[in-house]
Image 1 (cartoon, rainbow, N blue to C red):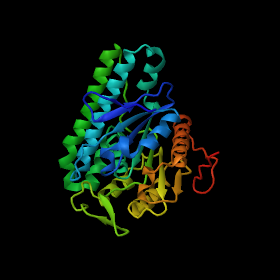
Image 2 (image 1 turned 30 degrees about the horizontal axis):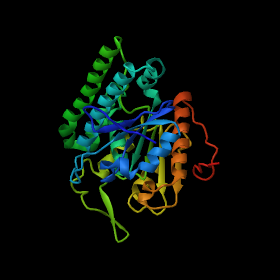
Image 3 (image 1 turned 180 degrees about the vertical axis):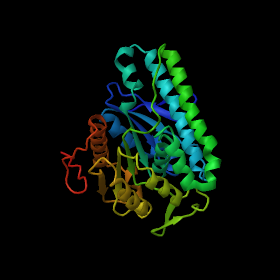
Image 4 (image 1 turned 135 degrees about the horizontal axis):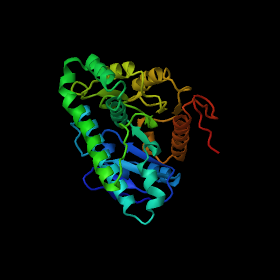
Length: 318
């Protein structure tokens, strides 16, 4: 049975696998992300059984949180703290030789987002884009956010400073220099039913009740993705045929990500509505594993490899 441990100074909980093949960092959706251990219990158990350690971010329950930049930076700060605490735990454990190096290695980490959690992953990758010493990143942010770019510069600087702090703490613990890549660039990520607005379904119709206050707006996020041509190369997508909430965002991301350098674009479509992931469906967990492992191979080989699947991805499960 999976067992989650609280991490000091963070809103995340971690389930350590005894022989992990990877670490999945999970960000849930609007409301569901505040109670992930209960809402996604079956999914987490299945991924754990497949050999993954899990880092699950728990949103403080606040349905009226519309500044998504601020939330993304808080998640980043939280996960830097989690990385330090995990390495400290491994450093002091009896199996130190076996697992310390594993948890210290950025290439062993994956990202998994559901619904609004996918927006935070997209923003985190944009924040982490250090192409051309951040000049390119800042130019893209300025072009898309216009005068709002001034408002988030402090948040961006905080995100960068959190990384420096984590590096210093981990280096001091290990007694040697430690390198920590800018989250989350070059780490495989999978978006499930991505939603860029705070959308709900009423009488089978999607309604964005709070989109007026969302920052950045859907239009601004789309602008950032279109212009950020150097990133999002290790990203896959899962969607559901009857999902009216994420339908438009799935169409947009499919078009944009299909043009990235890694091909073919990994997109699996299932039958079901937006809340399909909350059901106990082992096929979803098995497909998540297959997509993440294919993205891992692309990360390792730096080449595009086809998955032996049917349809758009197929994920043929034996």
